[in-house]
Image (cartoon, rainbow, N blue to C red; front, side, top):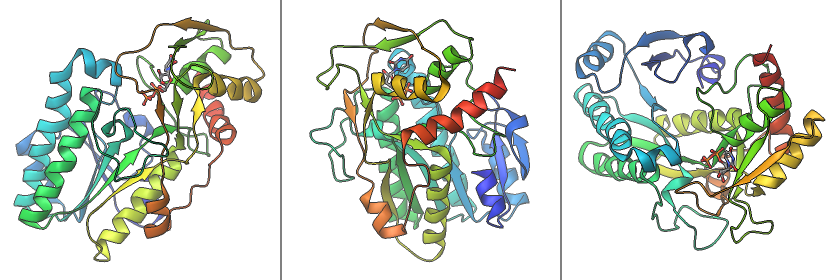
Length: 309
Ligand code: UDP
């Protein structure tokens, strides 16, 4: 996102407590180390800089972990966002772009999922995000906050430059874990659940490239600055791949056999999540550049090979 903002001619200030992030992967702009629940720090930043808009990515985002540690998720994702919105309100900052998630829907009643689909999250992660979305609507009514909530489906891939990509410690996401088998860092990939009501029994997800997500944030920001109303959009490619299909694509891209181990379901995982992202395509002209999974996995593979050196 920072790269996208700088390339588009904006100035960027990154606030990150580095509990998950890596300062060395920020490609420019200004960096401030700190937590977004730190009210004094927020007041200092909003006083020191003339900030037009806030993009909020700083959440815990692991479905399984959220089931085990719900209060950590509500504290970090919900309570700290209250402080951020409150500080924005004190300093009259009106534009907000929020990283939401497909996990707000829960087990879908039909796919592809449109934004009108009822939200009934199956895990605390999704519940913490829908609570923030509701809060944003209330802040719009009360204070004129203009927001766009972007409901990401499965973020994947790496910047095409090969300069940055995913680095989670420990890693828990499917595509990075599969590619770590191909680099020799791991023995096999565990498939979490083979008895789902899907074509091959494994979970189906809609994978969307990180650079396409960043592009959507820019479009959302510019729409708000041009006077458009607050909105909620899905971000996905309208196409689902099962866990076994993702592994197959990675075998093709890497040329590695990638052994699998079938194991139990992971708590909180819906069987199928596929986006309809027609709304953002129609209203903001979003057009993903990395739509097909093989291309997405190729960009991730360049990055993970570099990381493994
Ligand atoms: N998954 C899996 N093995 C793994 C990690 C993930 O089978 O080692 C499955 C997981 O159950 C889900 C899908 O892959 O259905 C994508 O999971 P990931 O953690 O990458 O993203 P999430 O859907 O949680 O955002």
